Length: 172
Image 1: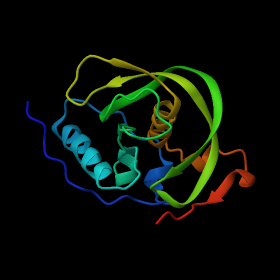
Image 2 (image 1 turned 180 degrees about the vertical axis):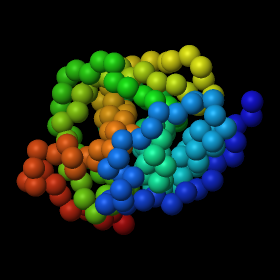
Image 3 (image 1 turned 60 degrees about the horizontal axis):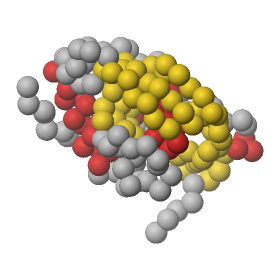
């Protein structure tokens, strides 16, 4: 089976209803899921600073997301670019607060407490066997952020309060 070529999709912004709705589980082998996976990777690659993108962020209520923390200064474990379907957290430990941003909330960042060590299970697009990803640090944070998108949550739903939300700095 050849990989479909990805198309760049527009990223929806809060308060779009799809961002606050739990996404549906998918058939990882369905042609539309393979196309969606390719589109997520393509959209992520053209978005500066983007390390993850979930289907709800492109207006699709599906449990599919892409992650790639390659080259990020806070990354320790790096699995490269990958897509997961129907992902779930199996183990989470070593909770730490860290700053997060989101393409769907472009003007804000916030401090969110997340597991620093993580085991996630899910399916690769086209895969029939569940796989596990063991990771830590920044990649673990990115995975939790994207799993939250699939559950209808934004990072703003996880901050301790208004005191932990900041205007995004503009880097030129």
